[in-house]
Amino acid sequence: MIERIRNIGPGALVTAAFIGPGTVTACTLAGVNFGYALLWALLFATLATIVLQEMAARLGVVTQRGLGETLAQLLKRSIWRWPLIVLVGLALYLGNAAYEAGNLSGAALGIAAIAGESEAVFAASIVTIALLASVLLLAGTYKLVERVLLALVAIMAASFVATFAIVRPDLGGMATGLLVPSIPDGALLTVIALIGTTVVPYNLFLHSSAVRNKWSGPEDLTAVRADTAIAIGMGGLIAILIASTAAASLFAAGMSAESAGDLARQFEPLFGSGAKYVLGVGLFAAGLTSAITAPLATGYAMTEILQFAGGQRSWAFRLISLSVILIGAALSLTGIRPIEIIVTAQFANGLLLPIIAAFLLYVVNQKAVLGRYANGKIANVLGAGVLLIATGLGVRLIVAAFS
Image 1: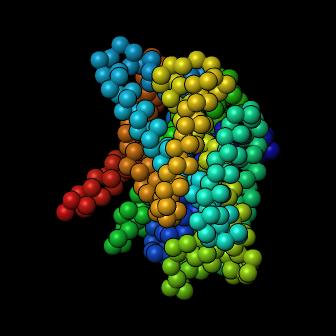
Image 2 (image 1 turned 90 degrees about the vertical axis):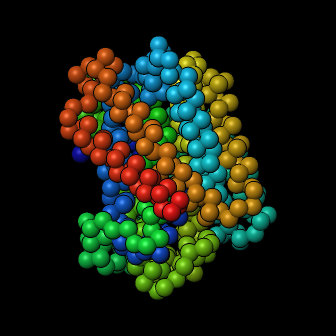
């Protein structure tokens, strides 16, 4: 067990990326508005993330190539090469820019919870966090960034675990919510947002590239899988605790959640008047971790797809990463309510997921690429199940919107 804990690394990057302000906000809103009813969506999303991220990590450690690089090579002689590269590239780039806006808004919301909710504080916070994320990406090595993310995720997780323990949610209600899928009236968008905030498409590119910095070949697959399952499993547990705490504290009291102050109320049973400081630290930590990983993943994905050399130190990687931060900061400063930006970004992720998951399944079934490490029947059944459920939810929402 000690050895497995020591091996945790790239999986923590994935956890740091999806346990962002989007998760805190979407899970809180799910608990506030629907009680324990949507916990099943978080359980499904956690298992789906483990399934898909294992495939991405396996691809990276076996081939020593990222998902973007592998896609570019597989499509090299196809007439569909550029249309598909443009589709995936634009979806990732624009989607991550929107996601970055949610990350920066969430981190700024954390500062606003402590310093006061004013436009000046929010704008100054956005600029400061964007600069901090830029410096970490430009000056930090992979190891430095990884340690920063691990520390920040630990701070945030401790706040929610402690609050969950003191609030004592209804365990029977939690079990029903986890094991009996249901979509109450008006909950479909929230379900897709919960899945979109956990099964983050860009993480598939990030993970397949990041594992190469820690492991060197198929002999490390056991460690890779343990890293993926433990780190992501912990992240999913945190998400379930957030939703359950909100259900026990806010939903039970008939409260709403429309601002940082409202979100902070779920901590009051444990921290009293200090609740806003706990929420502030948690949202800031969650926002900064994701504000780093979103541009990092975009840099990996786009340089690999476009086959730019040089890796994380190349001018192309830095330019792409910094442009994602810049666009995200600009979107955050438009004046749209932070919670609306955050939830919309998670919803967009949920709709993007089927496209990226389909490409991943195509790649990991290529025996010419992975040999005996290509997907087997069980992996394909699990992957296809995730793809079908995610697609079905998206189609259902679109049909509902038109009708």
